[in-house]
Structures are given as C-alpha cells and as structure tokens.
Amino acid sequence: MYKYDPKSLIADEFINDGEIRETLRYAEENKNNIELIDSILEKAKPRKTQDGVFASGLNHREASVLLACEIPEKIQEMYKLAEHIKKTFYGNRIVMFAPLYLSNYCVNGCVYCPYHLKNKTIPRKKLTQEEVKREVIALQDMGHKRLAIESGEDPVNNPIEYILECINTIYSIKHKNGAIRRVNVNIAATTVENYKKLKDAGIGTYILFQETYHKESYLKLHPTGPKHDYNYHTEAMDRAMQGGIDDVGLGVLFGLELYKYEFAGLLMHAEHLEAVHGVGPHTISVPRIKKAADIDPSTFDNGISDEIFAKLCALIRISVPYTGMIISTRESQAVREKVLKLGVSQISGASRTTVGGYTEEERPTDTEQFDVSDQRTLDEVVRWLMENGHIPSFCTACYREGRTGDRFMALCKSGQIQNCCHPNALMTLKEFLMDYASEETRIIGEALIQAELENIPKEKVKTICADHLEKIAIGIRDFRF
Image (cartoon, rainbow, N blue to C red):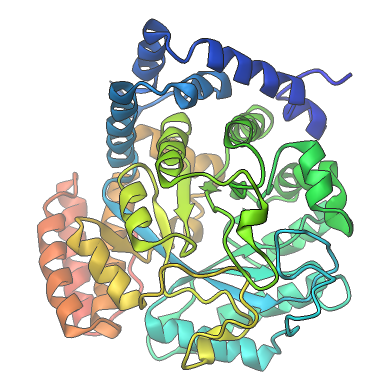
C-alpha cells in the first residue's frame, strides 16, 4: 500500500489516490464551513514584505475546500482574489504563442485523441525540414515569436533526432524582421538523456499533459502503446528537471475524469515539484476535451460547464500564484475573455492544429488534433486583448537572459518581474505594431503603449524603455531587459 509523500519520486506516492480521496471527503465535509473558507482565502491574499510582494498559495486540501464550496458570495470572493493575484504578479500582460504540429504519426492508442494508432481515417503526415521552414515563415509573417512544437509519439517516424533537427531549423530561420525566439516542446515522456539533448538544443518550457491523474481511468484511456505506462508518464517532469530543464509545464485534459479529483492531483504534482526540485511548474494548461476526427466528446461523461471551468481557472491562480496559466484556441472568445481576468497569463492566437496547416490558405481540418473554437487572426486577437485592457506580449527575454526556474520564481515572488516583463511587453508589442499589425490595431496599440509606459515602476527603466521604443520605430529590433 502506497503512502502519500510529496518528496517521493514514485508517482503512486506523490500523486496518491488515498490522499486525493481523503482530500475530497474533507472538502465535501467543509464546503459550508465559512470560518475555514474565510481563513483559506485570507491565507491566499498577497502581502507586502520588505523585499516586495508575496503570496503563499494554497495546498491541494485547502484549495479543494474552495472548489467544493457552492456559496455564491464566497465564489465571487474567490474570483475577486484571483483577479487581484493575477494583477499583482502578472499585471495586465498576456503572453502570445502558437502551436506548431510537426507530425501526427503515433503508436499510442489514446481513446480521446484522433492521432491514435487505429484511426485509419486521418491522413498521416510528417513535416520535412523544408516544410518546417515554410510553416515557421508563415508564423513569423503573422508576428509570432514563441512556438510550442507538438508531435505524436512514434520512435520510428518521430525520434528525438527529428525533434532536435526541427528545433534547430526553427531557430535558424530569420525572415524579414521575423524570428522565433523561444521554442517550447510538447512531446511524449522520454529519458533523462533525451531531456538533456532538448536542454542543449535551447528549448524553453517542456510541456507534458497528464491527461488524467486517476490511475485506473488513465490505464483505460491509454490501452496500448508506451503511454500506457502511468508511472513513467507521471514521473516525466522529474526526469526533465534531472536533465537540466528548469521550466516544465503541467496540465490535465478536463472532461476525462471527475474534475475535483483532477484538480487535487494537479496541485499535488505542483507541490511535489516544489518539494523535490525547489521550484514548481512554470506553466499549467487547462484544456477541455473537444470534438475532433474520430472523437466524440459526448462519449466522455465528465465534461464541465463554463462556470465550473472558470472556477477551476480562478482556484489554480489562487493556489499557485507564480505559475503561468495557458488557455488555447480550444476555447471560444467568450470563455477566453472571462478566464483572462481570473488568472490566465498566456494564450495562443491564430492556431492551426493540423500538420502543415499554416501554409494553407484555408484552415485544413482533415488532420486537426482538436476543433479550434477561436478562429480569429493574430491581428484580431491582439486588438481584442488591447480593447479589453490587456497588453499582448511577445516577450521571450527571461528565457534568453537565463531567468528560468527558481531565478524566475524569485523575481516573480518579489514583484521585481514588473521591471522586466512590463517594459519587455511594451517593446515586443511595438515590434508587432510596426511589422505586422493592421492600421486599426496599430492606432489602438500606440495609444496603449504611451499610457502603459507611465506604469513602469522605476524611472530609469521607464527612460530606457522609451528610448528603445523610439529606436524600434526606426527599424532597430530585439531590445530586452
């Protein structure tokens, strides 16, 4: 019988089923305990210290009590606190990225993914390096600077050498004023040796979705292929960090299993990384299962409403205040607009979830991994963000300046990140406006930059940023703090 131990390197111990079930029982018993709920909310509030600002976050049991609570006024307090924490640590910046699908060859049998081995209706495709180049140029021509590369698991068609070659190709392409400055990687669990190779290739964040922390469900949802091994998959982040990758990204696919179980497991995983490696996840993604070729979401009976989804986003932000939160184009404009206020700090824009989709004039659907709900152009998404009071940021400076892992977290916890991220966001937005934006977007953006320049805390930083903005206007690129 496994015992719960957040410092263990065994998946059954740091994601312990017994601990989750006990947590859910405790949460249900205390969901109307207003005194306890108030004390948990008070604990989560950011506080000023001599060194700056900090928030302690919440553990999985405390957060689960809030998730179980159905008292309307308390839920509104949670939303207000989530919004306050988001503004305190991330300001009104929203980091932009796009996924790039390299190959849909896959040997796994995942029943929720159209790439599964037995699906004979989907055309299989793998990008050549020349096709990778054309995809990257198309993304650069939109204005993207940050990519998340995606690939099915297939040791013959998609070996680590292929992934490394693609990363090298992506970084090598300089087209007009375009350049991909950060490549995040979302590929299958692998070895410490391979994670070292990814680190040496200069990747940003290594992302791996758990899909579900419920082991019994996991084994059923992944009946065949190497992904069937729950423990190997769940322990991947430890191997990645052992391989030198500072920034890792977690996520579950909401809708596969009961959301309260997944929420507790997700936070336990974050606590485990903090306990063992001294730094929690760099990002947490919150995808929901969506329709795709050969996949009908209604066959999974654990779907969650938009209201529950918003509550989950708010409570993740409250529980892990320093962690970036990602929402993709799986979600509609309306849903994304709501959760941006509740804690989301990164979004994709103009995404195509097909292999080779960016070079096609019309969005292809025959090889989509999931149905894209938000199909607006990057220019439209950028303008929409600004109209809603957000600063679209194409910044990759922290990664390129070595502010990763615990170094990034230390800056974030002290509030000093505002003197880096805020001006960097304005400068990268200026680049976008000069090189890629429509006239309407440019007008809105220039006004936003001038207003936000005054919100930079340090006068010296403000002066330098203003000077850099003038230089960007005459064609000089890639300034960063």
